[in-house]
View 1 (tube, rainbow, N blue to C red):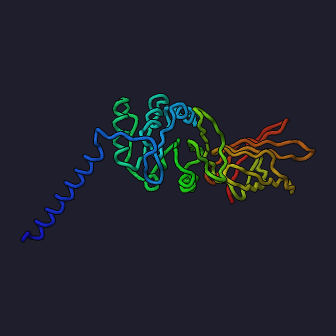
View 2 (view 1 turned 90 degrees about the vertical axis):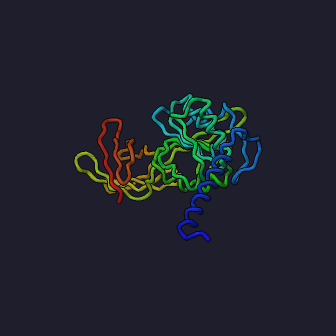
View 3 (view 1 turned 30 degrees about the horizontal axis):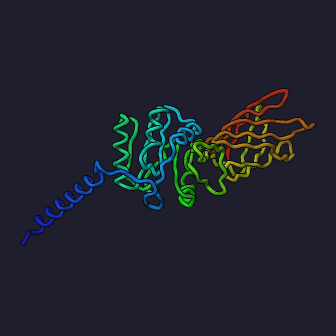
Length: 279
């Protein structure tokens, strides 16, 4: 009969061998995916190369960007982001066989220094460092991911093949190879009241209402509450107008950074800095 220490050692050795066998199976050099094969919550349909380039162009991918492809399949999007847009990219793929296949494609393209394929679950892996997210998932998966994406840093670009994100309207759309792509820019959270200070110490009150990137509200200045006109939020960039005294139009352009707001308020005669703090 084995002693306790020997039984523990035997168990650890057996576990290690099982993991080793699984790793070998997952990297079977003969594995090839087939169009329409079943996966976790999805079936595999490759994104056409023309649409891949269109998606990455829509997202304005640069060499400074970190691209995460959620449900990366054969790795074509991650590889194209590195090859043609010079970005660093990470693919997350649940199927170990598919992930191994994608890694071989990365090696064939000579992109090992720019592309990493993770075998993992997109609902568990951390992709918060992304500048750009790409995906080709079913609508219900997009909606499950939406709360996580909306908490990411403002300005993160999200581009999807075929399916939208429900009430969160796309900032842009495009078509290539008979397929559709959607682009969203993660908006800064601006909902609520802001104390605003203008040049010379003059104060005002800005109230903002927000539904995703759609914003509206009022500016209260000199005792008058005025509706905002043409308000627009794109990432952390906020702009709006309001009609002031004598129907003169004041225009604001600036940025939101957490609980701070800063920018320039201009009329046809002058401009001044505007700084705000969230109430």
